[in-house]
Image (cartoon, rainbow, N blue to C red; front, side, top):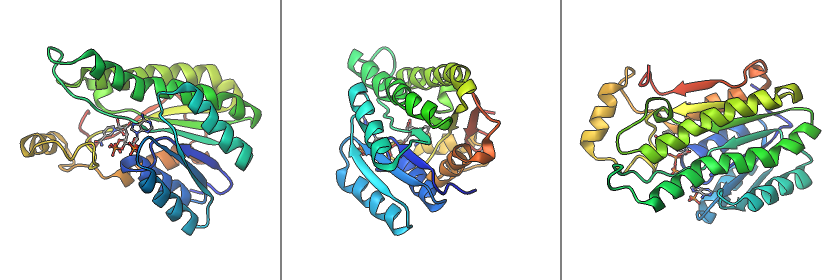
Length: 247
Ligand code: NAP
């Protein structure tokens, strides 16, 4: 796969899966901008690593829930680099609780960060991608958006919403050569999942046919494929990367 000359933006690229996606895209020759909410140092380190690989990098502080900020970020990438070819909507949070105990704040925070952010960045990316006569948007969902999960009603709803949004977006923008797809990870080792207790971790491994958790690079490789022209006839698709968990 060759991403030379492609200008990419990864939301939440300071840590975890987003960091791995940013570095994988850069390794394949792309210029990569990352956004973050709080981890400035980590985001700047990611940029240093991107630049070491000979690509251009940029770190921008931007709360993904803020629409005006999304427009600002995309406008900065297009002004500085000339185009936006690939958008990876990765920023996300979990605030798990049973519905009986879930607060309105838990609900709003997760829906706004995981789902509204996808609208914010996809909408802001549409005009520049139309001008460039094409683009690829990759939204990071989750297998629980397909299967649901007790204790994750807000998170599952946000991730299911991403699938509906992506398919609608893909249908609206296909004639402009803009593709949109979802990558739905299973259980991946990052800071988001390190808080789970041993029993839950063991249960997840037992329920995963490949018998182990995934690592961020295994998500990044699929994102790179969807970003590249090798996936030029794929749009509106949901690709599970979950060791067979939701099969
Ligand atoms: P993570 O390690 O907690 O990293 C989350 C990233 O999102 C960080 O870069 C964080 O930036 C950023 N972020 C959070 N809130 C933000 C906001 N309001 N505005 C901008 N950036 C924000 O999480 P992860 O495990 O890598 O998850 C990445 C994506 O994969 C998420 O969408 C998650 O739902 C999805 N996913 C993960 C798993 C898994 O098992 N790990 C499974 C399925 C799906 P700061 O550091 O600045 O806060």
